[in-house]
Image (cartoon, rainbow, N blue to C red; front, top):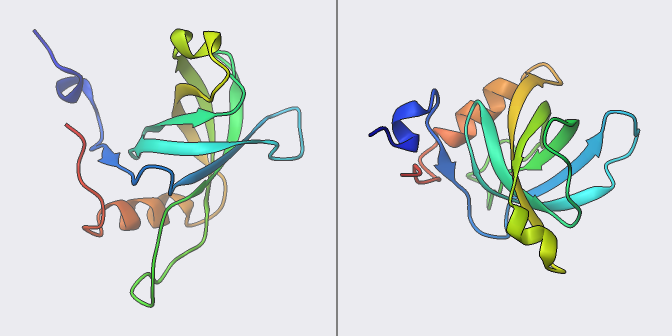
Length: 130
């Protein structure tokens, strides 16, 4: 039997709860109006929550604010990416709280976004997910 970690193409990193802000927008919008937090992230995608659901299959743009602190954190800039939503936690749709979902990154938006993400994930500040 195969586990999720066996199928993953990229190492996944846990993010501190409530400290990794995410903003999203569907591609037909110019503004990041949906906000939430990330749970874990890799070079290939992210598991996150937003106050409103986005249907699987939707193409979105994301702004990801990885946590940092003090003078030792040299690159506090956000990472911007395009992604496809691949699943949504159906049980969350029945509650009044945020909705958990996951996406696969399709492209990074600005020069250096991918490298900045990888450098920060490999900095030793984040634990690898099981």
